[in-house]
Image (cartoon, rainbow, N blue to C red; front, side, top):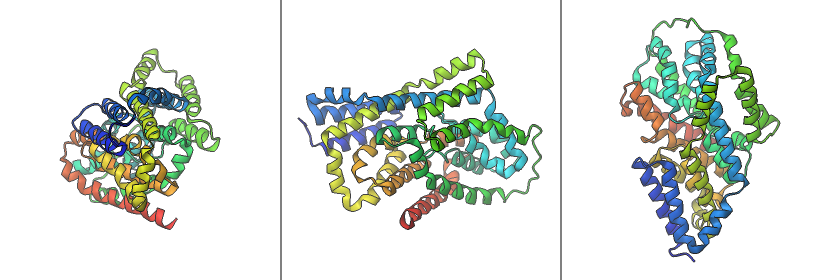
Length: 390
């Protein structure tokens, strides 16, 4: 029996999770505490059965997919494939390389990944004479183009598991977000690059043939989208072929294994499913759907946005907002929810990638926001217009 009204408990739990993350508490621990609080107060003794029911096949598949994707990301970077791929872009031109380098590294989901791309692309940015705030914007923005679409990202994997949708469906549904962000980034980034008159020298190691190292990404896309193969199998097949082709040393494989078994991400996945099961058992989602039905389009956009701005973690809104909003979703509103999460992630001052990029390039965040804010507004506007006129 519920000790407190379920919707009040849900609100308190979400506020506590956001507050704890904002206070630098590990997001996995914060989510676990919020889920346990909600389940205890809303379900009472029934919490034990609900917890057991949450450990199903979808949770297992999500955990495996996440672990394999992080393993592939680490091993791809450690064997130098990412560096070779980036060198191929400079043949096409410095502007193309400036945008595409962080975008390609963004295909490898990793905590603080913008720092990795910042280090790799900095010599090019210096060669182009870019200011520190412009460096930060371009690296940060293009590094995150794929967070709502690429099937290796934690958010896509988690949403696929929670919603029971294929990663290929989520990828195609959210493609307008990636395209809108790409257009926005090019508009504001290209304007800043054109202010520089530096003559850029061709990098000595540049070679278009090195673009062949993009094959793992093409493989995953083909297997999961064209052949509709389960994302776990798509990543596993690609990973096996990758290891056979590149033959990484034992030490690199061990390092990738340690990197992929990330306790924080495991906690997030496990307690996202547990939290979702608690919400399902209390029927609070249907209650909220009735209350918000008159403002559904606004609610599905703003709630994820606010959650991510507060937490600074790209996919917390999926764990916290999607389960209670589930009855309101149709394809258009689901797209709006992902768009709200993307906007919140890019604007959050607590976003580790933004902070790390700004620190590396030694710039002040307010200077970078003069580019991030209009680019984000344009991205949101383009997605909303797409929803309205499609």
